[in-house]
Length: 238
Ligand code: IPE
Ligand code: IPE
Ligand code: MG
Image (cartoon, rainbow, N blue to C red):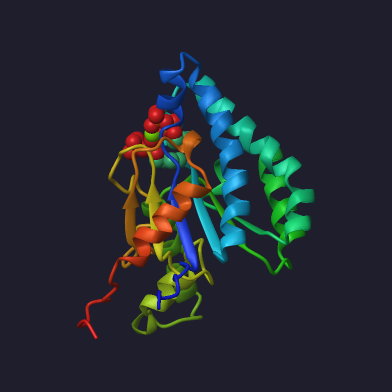
């Protein structure tokens, strides 16, 4: 009998290749981002239907500020539109949204729409959708250390009592299980400062498909590959 397929509880995605996708078609890079944004919405629904409980996507890194101002602006505008238009859909699909990353560097109106979306979806019980914006794993760890140091200074915690769990609990992903599967699209095989703490034992899957061409069949392929992995967590094969 065929063994039942395991569905990873948490899938993280480095959505890469929007620019190359557009260039290949003679389009401006921003058109690649616009198409990429549509794909995220579809993949969120597909992931939910497949039984994935958490989906985390890398939308904008702390390093992406170094791109031309016009591209940064276009990306921020796409995020702005998403935060404003997705509320009804999230309500309908029972999606719970959390933005990870340092939000304080974002424009105030965007911060306000993010806060509104998070607040209005926080009691939803369906898929948890994390969007990484102005996110860098090193920056996230720096902020976590700052929070922990402040608690120690205030006498709320003894430095000797800091455990790995303490660190997890002070990251932006607090309360969310670590990703089981990381997918990166468009041929690049690196983390680019994404979830470095949380990905310690995740299975890594790389595909040459550019993000705007990613679809449910590709997600299924990644989950199939995941099913052929043997997760040992440092132990021995049973
Ligand atoms: C991913 O696509 C989206 C972001 C990083 C915001 P890219 O914009 O990195 O596309 P390529 O890698 O240049 O093709
Ligand atoms: C990683 O992609 C960041 C996002 C997908 C948001 P990049 O395209 O910025 O990464 P590098 O520059 O190739 O490492
Ligand atoms: Mg890229």
